[in-house]
Image (cartoon, rainbow, N blue to C red; front, side, top):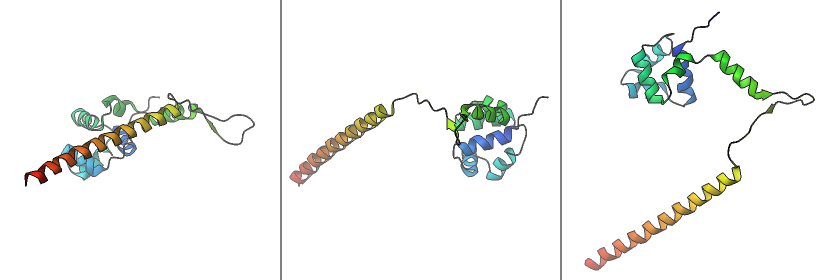
Length: 135
């Protein structure tokens, strides 16, 4: 038995995951907030409107057309395993980066920003000194 995908509900889910308010989406689409509310209640959304929404959210149109809640729940529950003998749930988390390397990278970026700010301050001070000498 094939389940129907509710495109409006999928738009709402992705919008909420991205932290976009109905008013913001409505403004970007040049329609009313009430129209967004109605769209989110529709099982099928017109393809041109769905394409506009997908473009604004930077999500493929197929995500709205094919997202199935049960499949997503299965994927999520498959990534969570309950080990025998433990009372809690263990998460299979394997970061693709070294957290220490990330901290060092952020520190280097902070230093570079600070040096740029100091350079700009020095340039501004030189300009102000020139302005004062010209008066």
